[in-house]
Length: 264
Image 1 (cartoon, rainbow, N blue to C red):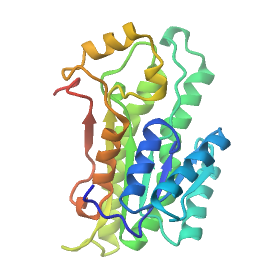
Image 2 (cartoon, rainbow, N blue to C red):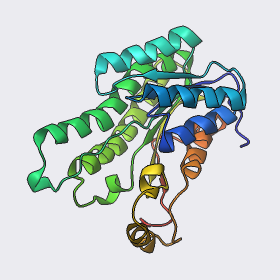
Image 3 (cartoon, rainbow, N blue to C red):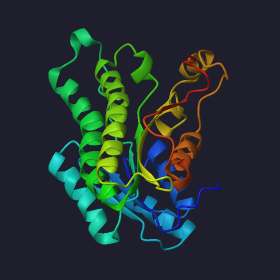
Image 4 (cartoon, rainbow, N blue to C red):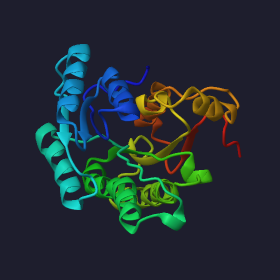
């Protein structure tokens, strides 16, 4: 990585497993202090925190439990990071759940749970971070959406809707923070700015996906032009690029990482 994130503080929701863990590690490798938020498994989360510390040195890495679907908890998470570290430069909204079932049989509770966590959590965390970033005149918010938010998927009405919502949320927040920065007189030729961008991964080879039967994996690969699944670090690479100060002219954009599966 050429991106230098020394002195930067990053908050990654869902940051201790799968794509989130790869993102946390990539940001740490570039010098950032990473706060990885997680929902449930404290032992595993702390092990991951210790792994980051052992690999990259004591930069104040943390694993913090938070239910991002709770607006008060999300706001407290952000404020605690700012109070402890004195700044928050990067927010990666990666936390997400699935409750798959065809729409005709989808329970309202499962619809709400997925929307609240995936889309609501991204909104609440971003909402809490934006005033701090605008005041400082710099910041990066990155949404981890999904290919299925763009093309839909059978049995995932709730998940696809939540991920599509993140794309719309990205564009709106990008416009709002630019407006707020301009109103505050902080948009100059050399300003780092506050940017909001979105990544839409396709099928990624996480532990959960790797455990699928070979026949299922072969079927997945058959619809991807490059005939393989993404590696988590390939998604993380785009996050780290967008998180860099040098990416200040990129905002409101959706970055597809799907091996060509959804060519426009």
